[in-house]
Length: 262
Image (cartoon, rainbow, N blue to C red; front, side, top):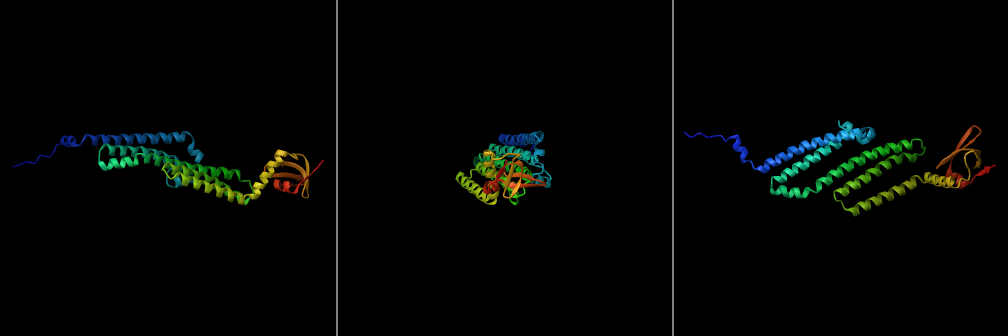
């Protein structure tokens, strides 16, 4: 009676081509290296104080809602990038024809895609931080249009980050230049309309600061207002009279004129 002999484990292992073992080793090494790089990147970003810098940004709040953080996302992104490269390299070692063709296609694209995603994340985070800083600086400006400036600053940074990210994945440069030119034109045109009085006051302030027709302590009369100049900056001049303090826009002083009382 014939007895079927089950193949020994050693025979099975020896029948596996060496390149498959090499591919498996590459994946294992890539996984370990990716984990180490992810941990190192996370600790490095924490030591650099990145979590404190980006605290309060919209992207960081969204990451917290998802149970993670911006630093963790960046660290995992670097880990997955190295693991992905290791997997592609392992597949290439197996010498499968369609895998080799696929590797040739993505070998130059994957690093650029990683850089593009990283630039986009950094751009969003920096844009959120710029919005917070600009909003803080404009907190005391009593102009309705001033509320637009923080968001305009944020989306300007994000837009530039998007352009850089698209350039990394070989989007047509001409299209990027046209988009950037159109965006700058829109910002300048719409900003000029929204802040025409603001800009006029600033231009008049530059003129007054350069010419210095009056200084702090001088007595002025401007459009029926008479008092002592207490403070002047790029936009307004503070004139104090008796129990009142008048804040006069600089463009009004230049337009209507003033009288300096000796």
